Image 1 (spheres, rainbow, N blue to C red):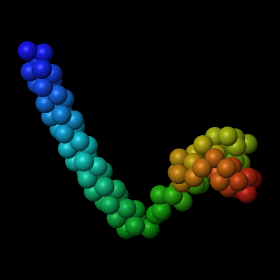
Image 2 (image 1 turned 180 degrees about the horizontal axis):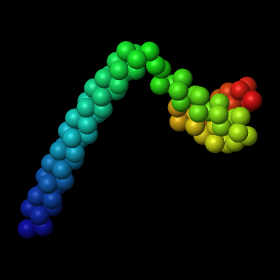
Image 3 (image 1 turned 90 degrees about the vertical axis):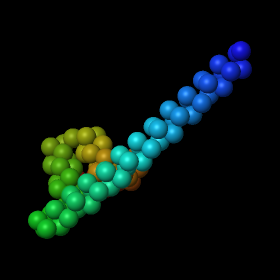
Amino acid sequence: METVGLYVLGVLLLTTVIGAEGRIRGADRRVARLEQKLDLILDRMGLDAADAALDGVTALVREGKPIQAIKLYREVTGAGLKEAKEAVERMG
């Protein structure tokens, strides 16, 4: 009887995992479509999202907040700590 219970539990677990994976893939597709639309809007307006965010980094450097500037630079660019630190130092 325990074998049947384990089998049922395994099937339920597998079904749950497959369902969650499908929802994640659907969310990924929706996010990708939204990113494309946002890129089109920014392009139409003649804006670059990275430039605007890097303006924030520059402002933090001017305010004497290098740690916050490095953190923001990493968030915006996806750079590593060393690369972000060097970039912020060049801005200063």
